[in-house]
Length: 324
Image (spheres, rainbow, N blue to C red):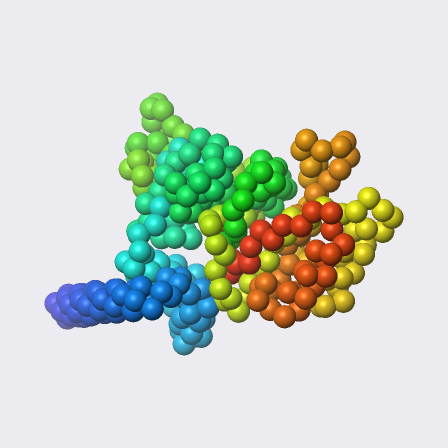
């Protein structure tokens, strides 16, 4: 019986090795195809990034999978493959709020994959400056937290710097107690850190999930010079100032409601350097500026605003409530 089980185990391992070889050969072939696509796009002066195509790939894979393989790990695997293949067409660099292995860094890796080049920056405002001056292609910054609310330093930076939102990422915030041994009785120095820090610094988990609140999620946005084309499941963000008159906010919201535009967020911030009690409003809505109802609604809104800035249209984060 033992010999039979050992034979079966050996056969299964050999089968797994053969499957792994097939997977490796196929991802290498996919990479070669992506590079050829990059050459065609460069020749025809086409955009390197096609969000709609990438979302269609993920949706098709998940549908074909029919939940036989767990959806979230499968999504992560293909996101890493797709991103790596895209970056083979053009390398990118990403600024994040440092130091290395912070949750901002982890959000960047989740969005862009491991193939991108990451640069830690000391402040959120410096990230905006680096992107605005084209010294770095993308930045990733937190904008709101499900428990603490808006990240005001990021919102304020949009008032002072001309950048566009290119994407968003949702990151579940979970803290781990870690040290070198993984033993809680070990007298050595311990730390509380992200899962990325464990891999980066080759440490061991002592206790998982030591955060004060479960279900804590932070929304990050990717900033760059240009917003991408439609993906089919998008958001649009605006920064607007309203006329100093009764019902101004209600009038603005009615313009969007009349066109069946669904708002996902509205946040007010004082306009720095302006008259006291003068506020600007950050508005997030479902849809892309290329959508007719969004375009018409925003054009109408612009006419009644004292200040209007389109911050970008971009793919919704996968797994968001609006995208589920």
